[in-house]
Image (tube, rainbow, N blue to C red):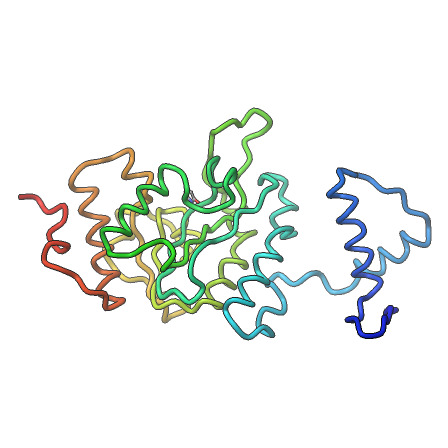
Length: 271
Ligand code: URA
């Protein structure tokens, strides 16, 4: 492939320049471009090269979690597997938090508020999640929060504020990104918020009720706890639901060797 060398500047390929040029046209709203025979031939030969890796290819070449996560954020913007489906909305909502965190929370997918603000868990479910973290003595900034699907699932033109859970296909499309995030962060423990995240990450089926209360292992070693999604607690404020989530969080705190006071141990216990 031809390279254009400019003294003192990094070499860029014709392919890079073409990609950037097309992206810039796309950003300007251009949907179609006319190709002459030569251009078509060149693009065809490029697309005959090995398919873009199913995994974000060179994350292993980057050394720090900061670099790896920045790279993944960039790759996720136009993640081809997700775009190809045509069932996810345009805006990518990446994860948030400390890339050195020992605790990673995995949610479902961005909703209306998250898409608008570009950050996971910033709507009502996010407020509930913040409450749970506060009760654990943690702040959002100290942990890493991601979603198993990085795009708000589409419900057509008149979607408004409505949200839906991602399908297994939508989850499968985004899963390589989540797996690469976990490889970059190497947390001590993961919590899946809700059944959708649990099924996506761990595989298998089953209700949260049947999956919670025990440690699962991801890749045979990484401890994963499944608990109810915060939005479940918004719908079900019963003491037993709140206690169930809290027991899962106590187990997580023990796993992370966080201090637990007597008062914390007793939260939501029936008197
Ligand atoms: N619910 C989720 O699962 N993720 C979000 O980011 C927001 C709500």
